[in-house]
Image (cartoon, rainbow, N blue to C red; front, side, top):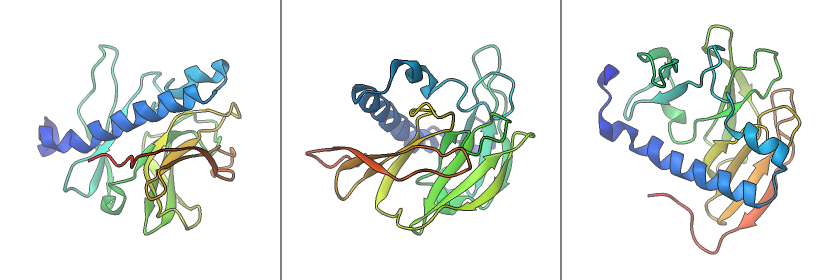
Amino acid sequence: MGHGIRWTGWRRSIRRGVVLAMLSTLVLILGVPSAHAASISVKRNDYNADGISDIVAMIVGGDCLYRWNGNSSGSFNAGQSVGCGWSNYFDTLTAVGDINSDGLSRGDLVAVADGVLHRWFGTSGGNFSYGGTLGSGWGAYDQLAGLGNLGGGGAGDLVAINVGASELWRWFGNGSGGFGAGSRLISFATDWRIQ
């Protein structure tokens, strides 16, 4: 693969994918209205607005973020760098859909670093612009995942696991680039950290 990516470079992405699938199933079981269930993955990661889902990811040990645009053959085009300086966000970076209702319908990103939630808004060029922070106190949460528009409000929503308490939490997007108050969905009897 390009950019020096090795198979081992995808292990964390695979683990995060497993967690995302588990979280999606749990949220659906917990009563997401059927009208909104389809929005969990529909074009949530279409960064270049061509109607086909794309991927953004970091290479293990690297500092740059790359985007792979999906194509009509069911594959992806060559990766393109969308900027460097992302190493502090490697463990928690996730796509959350459109959280700022900018009319572009492009995916936005969030991540936690030093207990602070950061955000980046998708731009018309398929890149991202830094949107500032959304407050502190996020250090307890691991395995952040954007699951699309769960609440039906039109903005991307966020779920995460509080590892220490073994709890699944949810935040509905407010449409202005942030999230409403968090709500605990469920507590687990076991530790949900993925090794």
